[in-house]
Structure formats: C-alpha cells, structure tokens
Length: 235
Image (cartoon, rainbow, N blue to C red; front, side, top):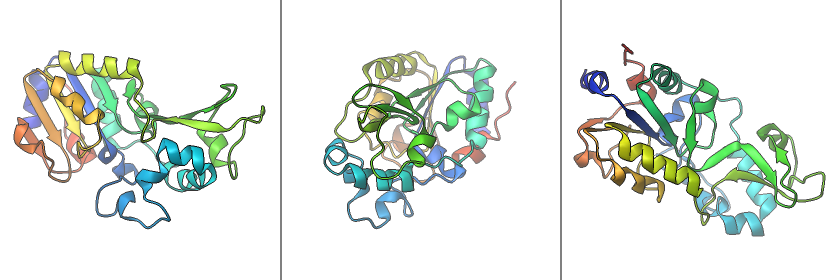
C-alpha cells in the first residue's frame, strides 16, 4: 500500500483534517449531498453560523446550534484512534483540525483546533466557563449566572482565527516531511490556505470526493478517512 510506504519512510508527519474525518462518527458535514448546506432551514447554515446572525438573532442561532452542532453522543472513530496511536509512536508531529467536535481530544490526541471547540463556552460579560452539556441542557438564549450571554468558543463566519493557533499550525506544516490532508474540500479559508506552506516530500490527500487539489498531490485516495487510516500498521 502506497500510503504505508510513505508513512514508513516519514520522520515528521502532520495531519490536517476537516469534516470528513468525523462523518464516520455520525456528525454531518456541510457540503456533501446530505450535508447541512443541502438541508432546509429558514436561513442558510452559513448565515446562521455567522457573527452577525449570532448577535442579531441569538435565539435562532442557538436553536440551530443545539439541533445540528452539538453532537455530544458521537464517539471517536477509526481515524481519530489511529492518529492518536501514530502520535504516541512518535511519527505524527501534529493534528490540525477544522472540526469543532472535540473527537480528536477524546481519542487522546493533542490537537490544534483552528475553528475552536463546542466544549468550550464563555460568558461574553464575565468570561465564566460553561461546558457543551450546559449549552445543550439550556433553553432559549443561554445566560450566565451574571446575566451575560454565553457564546461558544467556535470561530463563526466573519470572525478571525486565533493568531497563536494559526502560527503554530503554519509552523508544523512548514516543518513536516509528510502532510496528510483528509476529509476536507479545501474550500474554507483561511484554513485551506495553510496547505501552501508545506515544503516537504509527500503530500497525501484522503477524501471521499474529488477536490481542486487532487492534481497537486503525490498520493490521492478517494475513500473514507477512517477505513483508510485503519489499514496503517505502526512499526
């Protein structure tokens, strides 16, 4: 298997993943045929998950957020566990994710979360911390004990990524010899643009559907991420 050969000769691997890594855990992605963008809501999901919508229509935001973004019963799948195993073996330097579900962390990985996490929520007034369960079990607009509105620590549309996380992710990508991109359509910027900092030997793409980067990669695998990574033997 070509992917096995690449991993065997690699010394520093970085994994860059998107929504397709979590679909095998039952979490819907955005852009596939059955993704969130192709479901019917009063507003497009991209509009609902924007900073402006959150500020102006907070209750409607949370109605959607609880219904579609808080998948707290989801468990890590084969991809998450294999990456954690690779990390423990010392061949995987970093996991960088666009996902906000926290499944990499649950599987045991240290992860750079470009878009934040549903498991961190803060009062916009006093900064008090709240769990994802607190949000799920609330009704209407979740409020802090101080009366302030609670906001998920996720990067909404119109919001910038965390500078420290971006800097660390770019450094990891620029220093690795193998970059595995998986489960992402590479259409969400600025995260997708980070791939251009790769200067290593092997660029691997694992995605169910074709992407605009297929022709630029050393190895392209059109298959499920978990099923593909599960075949890897750590030596």
